Every structure is written in C-alpha cells, then in structure tokens.
Amino acid sequence: AKWLAADVDILFIDEPTVGIDIKAKAYIHELINRLADKGMAILLISSDMPEMVALADRILVMHDFRIVHEHENDRKYETASRAIMSAIHAAEPAQTRTAR
Image (cartoon, rainbow, N blue to C red; front, side):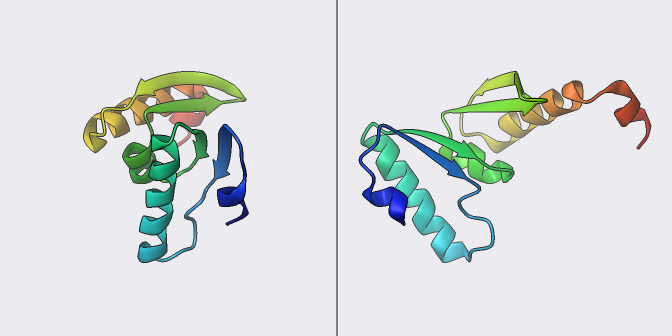
C-alpha cells in the first residue's frame, strides 16, 4: 500500500497479486488501471499471463536480461498468449527444447 502514496511518474510492481484472494486481486487491478488512467507509467512484472493481458498496453518478453519480443496488447488473451508463448519458445536454447 506504500506505493499508492508515492508521488512518482513510474511505478515498478513485481508480482502484485501472487498469493492473494480474487477480491483483493480485482481491487489491485482496479488501482493499477486508475493510476495508469491518471498518466502514471507502470512496469508490471508478472508470470500471470491473464493478468498481463488484462492490464498491459505493451508486453515485453525477456530472456537472459534482454528483450526478445515486444507485443502491442490488443486485450485478446488468445492472440497475446500465442505471441508470447512463441517468443518464449524461440528464446529457449535448442538443447532445452529437445530435452523435454
């Protein structure tokens, strides 16, 4: 809750809804959207793909500290998840993919 009181232009949030109930998650999503609507830039780090698709205007996929894919989000889960999973798969070393 400290981040709500901060007077900043950019907010970095790492996995904001891990381990909380659905009602609290919806409330946090509402707060994030409200801050974004007021012009705050928000960098959301999340492993929850539905959360990313619901909240993000742009989704970046990183591998080995590099951006390997940028997705302009259309808020359509199927489109976004397919593009993101393809980027993740392409970023994996070939030996990792064949070892599965």
